[in-house]
Length: 104
Image 1 (tube, rainbow, N blue to C red):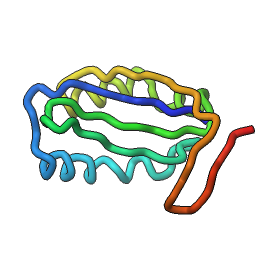
Image 2 (image 1 turned 180 degrees about the horizontal axis):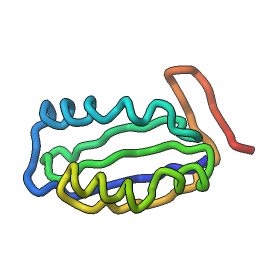
Image 3 (image 1 turned 90 degrees about the vertical axis):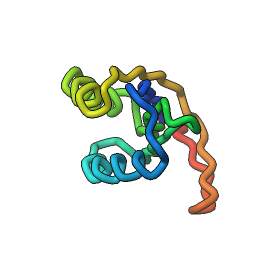
């Protein structure tokens, strides 16, 4: 599994409520993305940086989303280009489902 941390600096800080409204408006488009296991929308406590933490089945699946068109969409929607950092995630602890998941 692969975790990708996506971040972008907002042109102006937003409140948690504003971010929640924006994030809810885009969330449905991530429901049927092949290989995407989970997405967490994130907002820094000062409201100046936003992004997402994505859990993917593979790097190839992640790269299927992070295209030039997707980067342009983020830039247009949020006013800043995203940065992406990839991490291997060999084990995930899920306390909601009471599972420990390994990609081995």
